[in-house]
Amino acid sequence: MRWRTKLYATAALFCLAAWLAVAGPVSHSHPPAQGDKTGKPAVQGGLLAPDKGKFRILLNGQVVGSEEFEVSASGGTWTARGSTTIHSSGGADVKATGQLKLAVDGAPIHYEWSAQAQKKATGSVEFTNATAKSKIDLGGSSPVKQDFTFPTPRVAVLDNNLYDHYALLAQLYDWNAGGKQDFPVLIPQDMIPGSISVESLGPQQVENVKYEGLRVTTPDLEILLYLDAAHRLMRMDVPSSKVTILRE
Image (cartoon, rainbow, N blue to C red):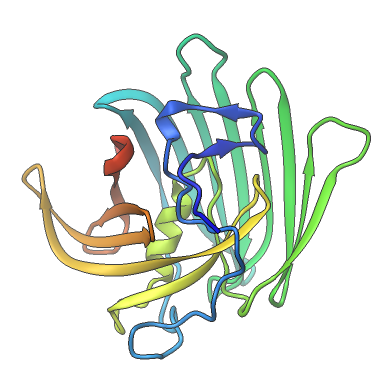
């Protein structure tokens, strides 16, 4: 099945031009078993690290929103929190939040999210081993529920509205192994499982700043992640949609 090329927020209730193509890494089919080009399992050496900051969201060079985020450890687990505001021309601003709880190896445990413009939607995903139990409340009489099974518990959660999840993806990448590594993913708002490929680009220079580069790809989309020496996400580019995410 074809890959998505638009980023939809909260089960297609909201859609912003600034997010076009960012959700493209997700396919409509279940992901293959993950591994790098040598056949070894991916993300063996991935380690989470504390982080906190703010991203500016740019479309065609113009600031259209921002995200504040924090990744912290407590009681043997990790929690990633994010809050995004997108300014929509001719419409209500979109405000979104997400809280992702992870095990020490980066496997997701629980995720809760909300997004609101004219209407509000909320949702959650409970992860047990390699099964994800997803629920979305759109304000109707009963929530929408669906379960997904993956080949591994190490699933990358990529929220439609939060870019700190790509910072987590960069930490899950096994930098020691290198090469191209495949990750199963879940977009909670769309209840769609899929897979992405992540590959190291080595040292990169963008606008006179030196980074370590990662390329995130699907058959029809490329996302470029630029990281500092500690592998913190500093910049993210989606060339096809002219979207740039910059750390302040």
